[in-house]
Image 1 (cartoon, rainbow, N blue to C red):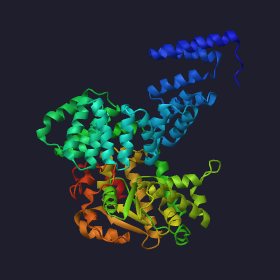
Image 2 (image 1 turned 180 degrees about the horizontal axis):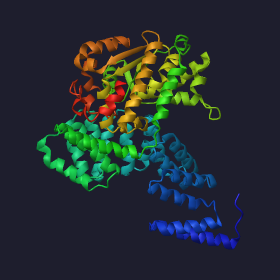
Image 3 (image 1 turned 90 degrees about the vertical axis):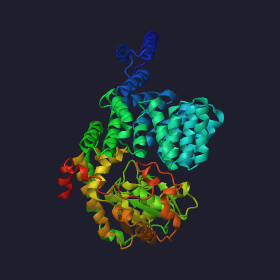
Image 4 (image 1 turned 45 degrees about the horizontal axis):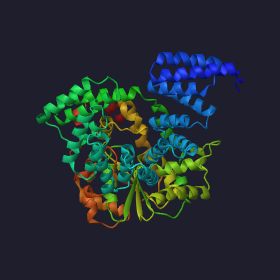
Length: 560
């Protein structure tokens, strides 16, 4: 507890706080820091000072410092809506959606009419795959503020995720009536066009986004995903190279442009140049990581060491065969398989929802965290509770579906637990050539932090080996028929035969829609969004071949 200041001292502190806020508004960071020091000399735990220091740290890229100061401000004055909002915005920027959600909800309880709190809550719910809840919040906001572009864009995103395509487009068009050059609305039109397989519109809208805002990072990979570049595009290519030259090196924009230009050079067959761009982009991402590859690989090995065949033979989970899990490495062809299954009239998809991991987390006591060892000692009741928690999340999203596809790739870690909690479910393991898989991960700038191993060829190789060892372990110990292994190369070469085998493995009758998967209305928001709107093609087979010399370190690790 800090001592109570005298009236005179408090007046001095209040005056300094006022000067600090003025300096902050003027972006006079040096004076701002000096005033913070003076205030802290009088009142070390002043929450206003901590809040300002947090904002400055956040702007300078000091994530650790920003969190420290924002948490300090909230701890001293938890009833301050602004402090809660700043901490929520910080967590949201860091991709910590659950932590951010708690802060936005706390701010909303303090002030039910705070629009920023409601918007933040809805954004977090979208990130947590709770589209229905997010949609309801955006809809309520829209009814009160129909002229707000920010709310309209948010409602578009929620409606889009719920496959309400016509409705979602209406929100974008309303924004464009008010503001024809709104770049977020045009970016939304790119997403809609991609979803509908309209690559001409997707390309033109992506180019318009770039013209409106050359710093719009997301437009470049969207453009690259729908356009095959040729030397007829030299003017555009030079323009993109010029954008990159004028961008701060090692910045996110520079990184996104490097990935995009790498893809363009690959289209042109200029492979050494393509690799140079892609390597530079990955170096930028790798430099900004706080990722422990050794710990992650050790974790996968620990799963192998702690799960044995007798665990898999003694299951006591719930009697429910609704879920079909797709697992594998990113870029293995899993989205293609998801689309084939989701095209079936009896199947719906929950995408990459992380529902199973969330259910495991709900069973974990913060005071006594759940470990791999403890899960091996689960009782029948605990496995049933885990299975029920998972299925409740599925039913909340797709209440009437006969079968549901869960394409959370990181469930590779939970295959054993999935079988024990849901012994009647099917696991589809999608496999692709190792070098092609790794190269596709390396060149495609996967945004999720769970794929952080993908920005360094050495780490990528060691992770792939650990993944392969884990999946071989599951294949060895699971009862026959639980896990079906599908080879991507076989699927693209023999679509009809392999599709029929896949449907049979999932106990599904053949349906013509599964052979026209590119017409599926299932929403996809992965890096494969454009590819699965095209008929089956085999051009990605052997995609790593032109880069074998560049990928030697990766090849050596995979061969060991």
